[in-house]
Length: 353
Ligand code: NAD
Ligand code: TYD
Image (cartoon, rainbow, N blue to C red; front, side):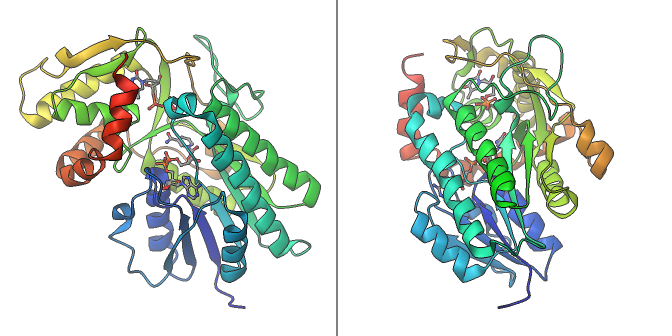
């Protein structure tokens, strides 16, 4: 067996996963970083083309719904750590097809836990299972208050229910089998490489194409936004310095009502595209609300700040500027995605709104 520290990152071809894989490959030349990803509609190896030739990087195309495949890859690579991000991640898709979320997010997580357990049972020293989760497991907030690590779980969408279930299973394997684990629950991420079904990249794409910007309901829904690279840095820190059996909330200290965020995005896009002021905002269209739409998410990230010294490194303005610049410089990436399957998803999702 090799003594090289090996981490299996699941979902490493996705939005957050690709930023994390880059961070780990660049920061730890002595490690082996194995990216296990099924390359669903949301996975894209283009996201990693700058590092995919690195000696410490391996890609394995595999589906976490397939227990035998997961077992085989765990035996092959003998991971010391698993950082588990692979998931169905979009709330609107979970409303259309909840089963897919249970199959990947719940059963897929169980398959990873079982494979890790059967590999190391009784020899847990230096091993760690790290589950990447969301603040959406806590449900919704009213006008005030923040989610802390002790807020009771109260998920409202099939997506958040499936993430809550997988968090509970990770904890249960910790309690029952002594598996060393950590969980982080993060707020909404934004940044380069995000699939254009989520609010910010969808609206950037629609502004470029001069298409309507579908704001759900009255737009008075609040989210706490974090730049994706700051999330990747937090994950690196928690993987190395977090305490086993602990949960850490990660957030941007950055709450925005959707409609206010969209207006700022429109202003920045007008400037970046050399369009006249107000041109993008004129595309804002209020559409039918999302069923079960959570009113407000906001994270109290003081535990990770006080105990591990993490805090966001970019302001929202800087992050949004970098994000817009990336999408404008990478229109080919955007066009590759917004053709084909995405197009039919988009049409079925928005045709009746
Ligand atoms: P994403 O949808 O961009 O990427 C998901 C990745 O998982 C893709 O590469 C996809 O190919 C892969 N995948 C999906 N099903 C798979 C399967 N059955 N087997 C193997 N691979 C599979 O997601 P993201 O936004 O990068 O989110 C990553 C993780 O972070 C998820 O677990 C999500 O719940 C969590 N999270 C996301 C946010 C956010 O704002 N995006 C916030 C908090 C937590
Ligand atoms: P989203 O990016 O889907 O993330 P989440 O649902 O996980 O928070 O949505 C962010 C917010 O933007 C959420 O309140 C729903 C809203 N939204 C719209 O108003 N229009 C849209 O087309 C989308 C995709 C989201």
